[in-house]
Length: 115
Length: 113
Image (cartoon, rainbow over all chains, first blue to last red; front, top):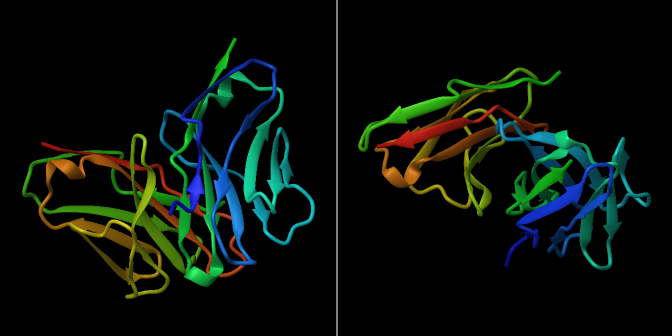
């Protein structure tokens, strides 16, 4: 079974609008971490935001927030006030300390911001 | 700032060649990782290492080997390159505890002809 599922291969959003990128995860562990990365066309992977499984508050970093719904095992990324520079691939990832030091990545969502 | 560097951004090799991809990190991280990235498949883990001279197979180790002789350096080796190894290769590193992110290198786009 897939550890991380991203069901949206591609998304479009109008500039200055908000957009939600979906991510669901599969784990039986109580302790885990969830991550979002951005990959522009240049290829570098840029860390955006982290959510620990025990964190009660949703993580926020500037225009990025993580909508963490533990019971549903979802960790959606919300980008507010989209900018043209937000056009990129976005990857959701999970780390389970109990299974070693591996990170599990989803297949990614390609976001295009329309002027 | 953490820095992860990879020896080449672009590489063109011929089928059957032995290929070395080098990765160096400067933050004394215990863990290092090699991924390959293909369209529609996301990042798939090839090998990772949690200490010097230690290595663990990831999801797709076939056709690859690794070497970690020093803490800061993690090498990926394609013993006999094949066309299906044409891909983007990403190296990453992280601490072993209190892990709140992995740090990635810029990637190597490998073309095997």
